Length: 157
Image (tube, rainbow, N blue to C red; front, side, top):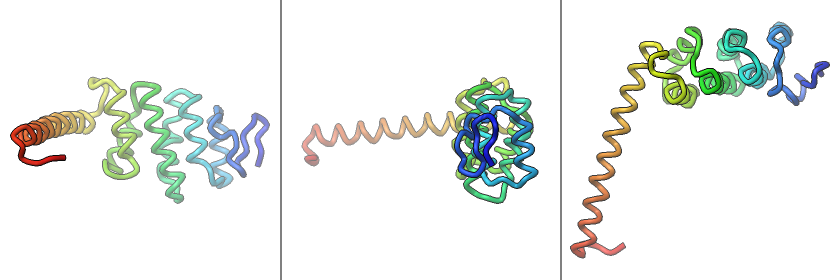
């Protein structure tokens, strides 16, 4: 159904411009299919307080694709607001790294100041920082050994 403000729930056109939380709520009640897409629009155009409960609700949609868009919206919210609400922290933590929440978790760790992170995210930040540093050291050692091996004529690439 086409909205008067340029969004069309049937085709999905314009939903990334959705700026009316009430319209999203009404669409949820009607059982519209593109709620995850629309919640990205809310993340871009509404306050975190307005968007957060709708993003969290969209993270529980039955359609996996639309749930994925809701997690994308959480990542956008972290980037744009430099913080998240307790309900979004909880939803991302519940989903965990390695799946649909991987990129939003990374966005949160990148864009939200450490002091604003929830305890789980603080631990995750430390884990990722240490892992990345160890991986960088390991690669430097491997590349150094390869360079030394080439210098002594050990193999030709």
